[in-house]
Length: 388
Ligand code: ATP
Ligand code: MG
Image (tube, rainbow, N blue to C red; front, side, top):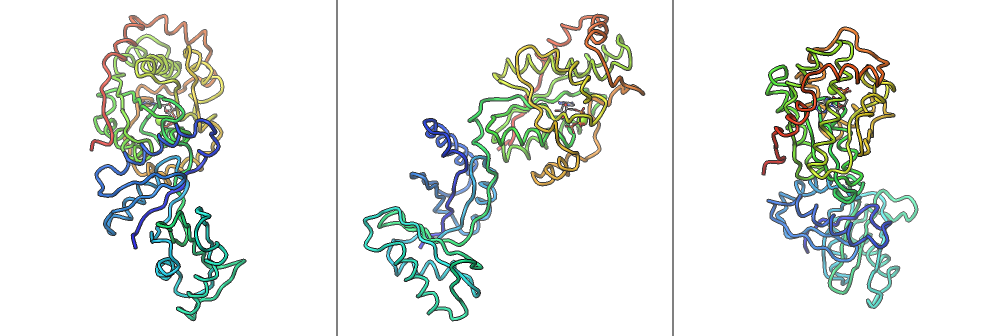
């Protein structure tokens, strides 16, 4: 009798002809996630199974797999030969100590010498004889014992399952460039788009020495946490100091944030081209701060020439974003008090209703603006997470 983990995938069955593409990607992502752990993955039609691991790492494997997008659930199961005796031995192990139960049998191989109904009754009856504190309840049992008979050699026996992250396999929807600040929102927007199958590259604007080494490291830390879900991820750090100083020097102070964000978006689209990303993601949330009013978003967005900008948090309440950031594990790092470049040279009263004309007028006053944008793009620093 082997201990194994049985995995089930989520929406892939909806994908018709592309199913093989999704499945192969999911397999690749599972194998990448299991790197460095001694175990084996078996991928047979409709059943993914992890086996040949030491009992003490079962939890580690399960926790890693629960963060693979595209997996729906997993079960800790016993794998046995498909005889009633063997299946009963396994059922004893997974059965509750007391209370009510039901046995549910799935029999994939219809040439087996017994029917599902017979096997369910047989195992249920034997369990009642084995433990007198158990009782059968077909309609509302405390626990269900699942017997999944694949063929004459293989049956899986388990009770219950744990939910995994759901969503689509990372990489199945293309590549995106995600704007990662050190705040609470952008790690959540990154998570959400990875969940829909985007392979992500992260981009951070860094205004050293106005923002510290720690502020940059914090973003790399956040990316490392996110990489549990996104898989290996490049983190690009753009030197943003010179352009910010130039904006501060030449532009009206109440347009500072607007111009900073437009410069960010210009750089972002160029970097997206360079890194073959097909979309941009940010953590904007309508009305949250001055830079996220309808007018501000319009003026910022207008510098983007080709790519779609996804804002998965646009309709969220802050409280819901915080809850999600706690769930995915980024919250505690996000609230560390390091400054973000958006708060450098912050004016007392930023415009809440900027116009494109006024923004362009201000930009025309900045000496060497285009060169500064190109310089930032050409001098970015690349980190890769996780480092293993
Ligand atoms: P967050 O919590 O993600 O920082 P926020 O509510 O503080 O968001 P802003 O600071 O206005 O909002 O930023 C809006 C979005 O712009 C962020 O969610 C992020 O995607 C992007 N952004 C802001 N600052 C940076 C930065 N320094 N580097 C990369 N992206 C940034
Ligand atoms: Mg921020």
